[in-house]
Image 1: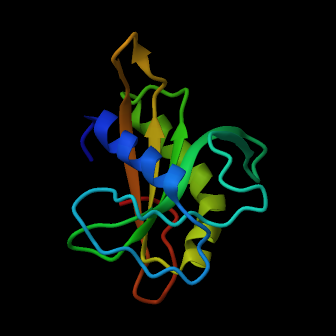
Image 2: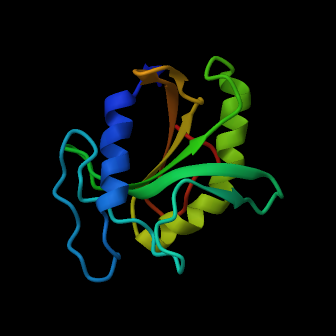
Length: 154
């Protein structure tokens, strides 16, 4: 995947998370090319509550920026988890290992959401003053035909 500056996409994702309702019986979002405002987060007893620190089963803590459904124009909706990393986006091998560690726990959320794809979005801390930017790298996991998930991203 390419490194990208996702200021606009992250803003749309943040709006989607902030405006999301409980999953309940809401219909699936209509597929579009970019994140929509029709995100459906995994229900949490404390509500949305993002950003928040999450402790992985490995013991590591990560700052989760958001989690919810994301729609695509040419693919079924998927579940996305956005988190802040301390690893440089340039260090792809270390970043991939971190995403795989997160995936071990996040795959359960993807199963509950009954999606066929899941995206882990690693975000460097923002930089700048009035106009902020950050770099992001996405890792995509696609469910296999037999219903299982891979251990490693595409």
